[in-house]
Image 1 (cartoon, rainbow, N blue to C red):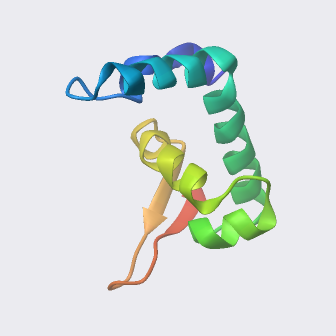
Image 2: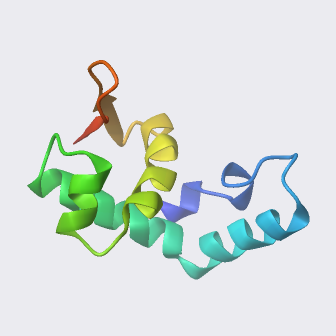
Amino acid sequence: MIQASLNFESLARRSDPQSSKRAARKMVGSGAVASHEAIILDLLERYPGRTAKQLAALGPLDNVKILRRMSKMEEKKLVRRTQEGKNECQWWKL
């Protein structure tokens, strides 16, 4: 399960205010982070090589929620990105 390897510290920086750390703890504890990651992985399986905006149009998460998850998912080697010039990143499930 994705959530088991995730802790709230990975969503909030040390320099973030306590309110951000509480929000991160709530997101992890509620299962929202794991749920968002599962949705994104499902979308990427069905629609590989799409941008976050394109994925948002195809699923229940908005562009911002998708982008917030992508960098951590990339660190965990769940997804990778390609980018040409100043165009938006295209995302791929690994």
